[in-house]
Length: 609
Image 1 (cartoon, rainbow, N blue to C red):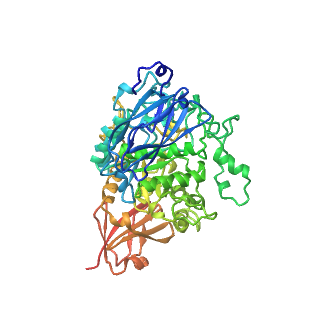
Image 2: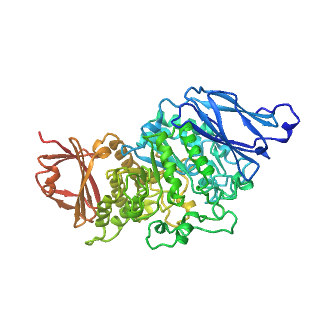
């Protein structure tokens, strides 16, 4: 920022100007800049350039803010453009604003699809690649690896260092928990209490290093998905010291009012307006102020911030935290604006409900009960996650056990596009799948085999491949434990396969084999799913695409069982042979075959010759 040498210049200073930069040739030619500084609304901004025009200036009740509406012409070239600020026709400030050139090969054009497998990383707990940034003098919380809820030192450089491992394992997308600045007194590691929307937390690295992560990941065939939080901020966000308007937050001038988490109230025909309002407007906790997206200035700010990160870091997609807690009308506007700018981008929203009627409501193309129009391409499939655990741990009966897994897939009629759901066995907010399955390796293999062959886009939580567990505690700090080998001096190193138990090694090898086979399995990427009702603890389903057919058999019994392939001739038809995709074993489909106890068998059916 350049200050003109005038007496008035000493009285004015720009504290924040956001978005901090922008791009030419965006689909929308409109841009709104938020300017924050002491009494900045006393000034009048001007731009002396035909290709960048000020169309409006909005002042709010707080004189420390100005909102500048700009129009960017088609002829606008990359470069620095002076925004001059005048008081009584005297120029007192100048800010050089960067207009950048857009990515020619945008990762959002291909985005993430069912061909991919997403690796979810808690950055602070994955790998410490730069010990010098473990603690930062200007930020409150310092590193303390002994604290389960403290900062442990994992960072962006640590992820970059392990990209070769992720590529070798077969993962094709990374989703990290949020990495923007979280300058909070405790539990700042998880990232969901933003204190600056435009800056990567220095304890993770920098904006430039985040950009490098995206570029390096692409070189390894891996896309980068950003975790977006639209619903709330951290109590130490710079806004909280000087809120722009009296309605920037929900319950802004009240005592703490918490949400009741009753997402059903948004759909319940008998619900009171009180319950509907409290769900969406209530705060999660006192340290997470709830944003009021009905404020058009804030709404536009959040939209532009999302677009900024997609373009800046060449993101391949987005995951949206606590999706349904934000204002419904805003969510429709937000998703519409993002997908207009990036028509092929995939965005997955978190709606933590096990009722598919509630989850499916938010997916684009759904005919909703109230006429609501969503533009959200994908949702997290929490109903299927619950069904996987129930199906493998509940006793087999006419409607329990594997029948619960079957029923979850049968409910796909409620979704506009079930093949675009993001599926998972666990995530950062629940017990590890190995713990949920009572640390039974056979059940673990069945769960992961199912996840990687059923419909949808699979997501695997970091460390799942080496059986990370939380048998003694459901505390999130324990669930999000450090990846073995991510810190210098660790006794065990899963990145190198050193010091692991036999079961951990077996699980890691199993996941690696499945993932790398899956990369070229078009029937899994694009194929129709046909399943047969479970019978006597055996569940069979098929994936079909063009001439490729995959048969999957789950046997939950503690003994091997015979399977008559002719019972599935509706799909098998004239094909007589199948090859086990992991072992290479050949199987004749003309006679009954034995299916190993507590196993999942994946077979590629060979075309009849």
